[in-house]
Image (cartoon, rainbow, N blue to C red; front, side, top):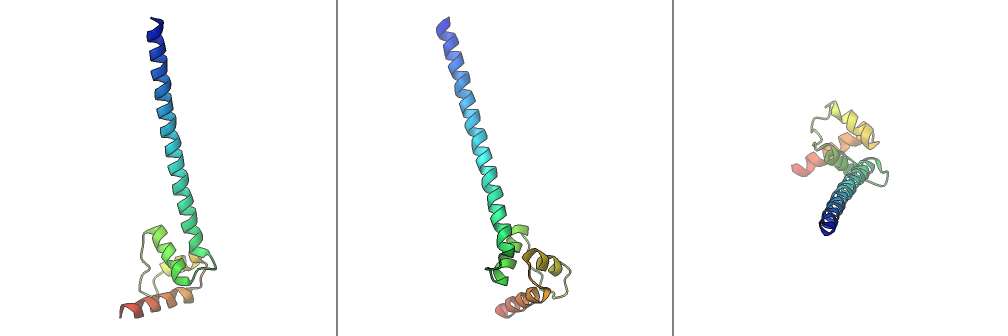
Length: 101
């Protein structure tokens, strides 16, 4: 009987290890997602990045494209998030529009 109890105890311990590994993996995945988001947000307003890169980072974070209308209200939001002026955002619009043409 004692050998059976040892087997049960070991299997319970092995199950705990699997559960702990799973929890650790999930915690690591959550950390990696948070770190990726932090880096993407930092790219939005890094002064070393060109306006196009900052706006591209904003688009990636929000899964949106910058509108082509130079009077669109979201341009103010983009400018604030990227720490650019509205004129710089509108200039990036013009650059993108010229590339398409």
